[in-house]
Image 1 (tube, rainbow, N blue to C red):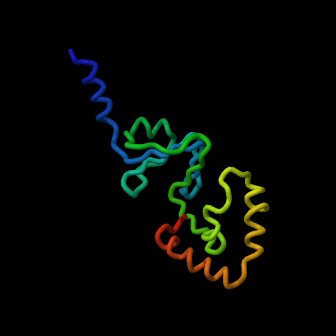
Image 2 (cartoon, helix red, strand yellow):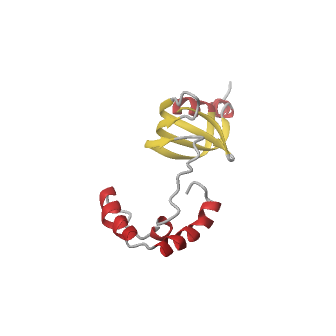
Image 3 (cartoon, rainbow, N blue to C red):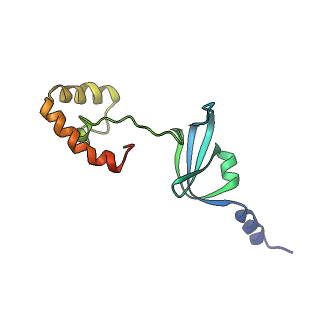
Amino acid sequence: MPSADAGAGARASRHEPVDLLIRAGHVVTMNPRRDIIRRGAVAVRGNEIAAVGPEADLRARYEPAAEAGGDRFVATPGLVNSHIHITGEPLTRGYVPDDIDFAENVFGWLCPLYASYTAAGEAICARSGLPDKAKYPTV
């Protein structure tokens, strides 16, 4: 008669290993229809997307080494975000408190700071931000 451990091992062996399972309340796919999957997930192996789908389906198929995300997140697998702020932000990183709301962040801190920039300051800011953008293109 098989032991309970043997049955558990057989179930675990049916799961493909992946490095990371990213869970999200919504997954916006990059397929031609831009399908939106509620309670979705993205399975990642190495530096490639192994699968995208409902979280329950991916959990049934994969055994992740690590997990990230949660219900309040939106995942956009395959989207390359080329929107960057090359001036201003490299010099403000770490300057604005993390625990303030959006309006205070933008209107209380960033707008007054950016209003004081000069053309020479913007040039320095752009040059100082380029190494980060080359190393981390979507940061």
